[in-house]
Length: 133
Image (cartoon, rainbow, N blue to C red; front, side, top):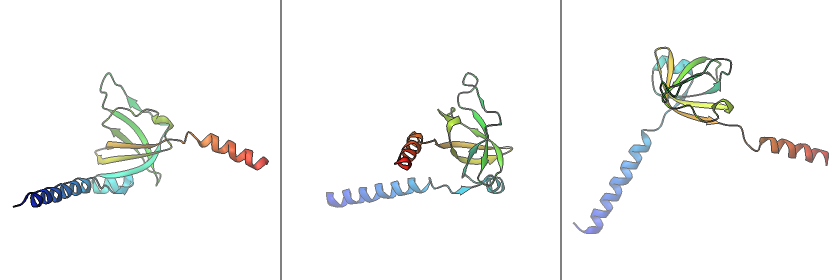
């Protein structure tokens, strides 16, 4: 076999490996109701229930954070995140948690926060200024 053939086969094998790795990360979106019924790994989109308690004690367990979240259908459930509490968590406008529903709570191993735009106030100010002109 020539060197060019070996290099080509290695590149094809690497591309297949990358594709297989990427395919394993596809998780579908669902609500809490579907997560409870299926027990499958899903992504749930919702907002923080600010009137319910949050639990995070880094001295006791730095990788345990629990809070209540309301999904897009209005169902509210406890979420247990197996990570530390994200910075500026309370300021988030929207939360996406990835995990499975176990026993009485949604156990998340990944979280994505949509925080308010730092330019939002500036945009409102500019719009008001343009209206006066």
